[in-house]
Length: 150
Image (spheres, rainbow, N blue to C red):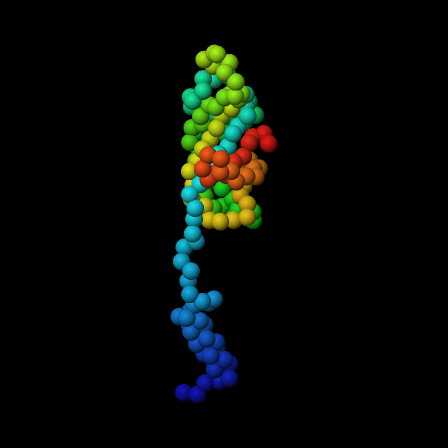
């Protein structure tokens, strides 16, 4: 059987593609990207009156911060690194001084343990709302922190 010029070119191109597929492109596969355990911490400054340490959710304009609200941890380009649902928030005192009462002005804090690859920055999107910038903080262990409203 005699191959035409077009058939020879197509056969040559196919051979190159098959060879590239078996040898890989760009060298050896580096494997999965390394990740680091950290905690995403969001402090919702809704100034509600609660007992410290009780479960809470955001109030007023922050109702979308609640147990089971969907979240996405994003890299600077907007690619999702981690997705999930928020746990229940925990009431933390809004002021450091002891007010000598059972219920005090509080903020609602959400803490989510995650595994993240190293990036130059991170953003958090909750319930489809505009993403919040996260700031690295190691005062209580490795964390990425946001305060709402900023």
